[in-house]
Length: 313
Image (cartoon, rainbow, N blue to C red; front, side, top):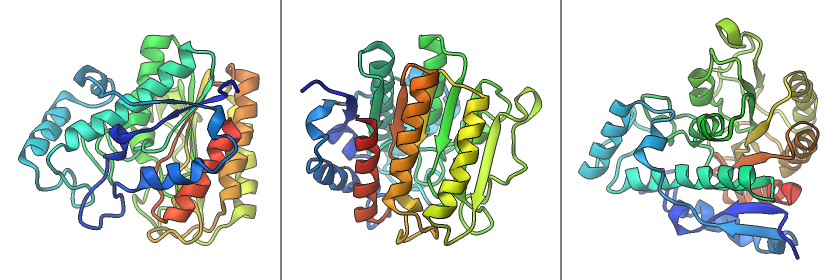
């Protein structure tokens, strides 16, 4: 059976996580893979491994001074890379660079190979800013992939869609004044959840005004609310047709996540992936790169991501 989607997996990305009971632990990859292996789509996946991103690739998005700091904190092996959410440990630089390399491998595969859709579970680290870590995210593989798509594959307009419960602030502010990055984010209202950003009136700056869409969702919002909001996202993307779609599909927006307050089911994630696949078929040769993002209830994470992969495959 010929492959219909690319999956980045393996110990190189599974090792990204934090110790001592941290919500973003290192079991998330294997929990997902155990569930995905039960799916009928498993045999239709081309499975590839990650590589360690080069320093030059990290600097597509991040400042040299920040990369230096991560290298030094990784050498020291203790402390925090931010104000307390993202611990440093020995090897954190290498582990984070493998996540970026995995996302870049997925991008390269869909841009140059016969299969236009890919998924990486331990990716979508959307909080890291150009000059700092934040919210469990050391390097922003989303932002790096956007820059790589434009530098190496000649793309002009890239769409970034985010359904994680948390606002993708690292991506938003990293490209807030860039009119060629189309940004659409459904997230829990920042009045109730970290990072406290992503209000309706944040629509881009300067030449990029109107190229960013933030849709805050109230705590307790379920699938019906998601589907209503999703219609707005689709209209927005149709008005700004992309050449590549990135989907950050964090599973922490499902009901029962221990650190968020939304109440979607896995059907929301399946719907988003199906609709983006169809939109990509119309506008950008089917190219969709999906990244796992957050999710701290193991059952939710495994099922939501599996439904995304099934939709893409």
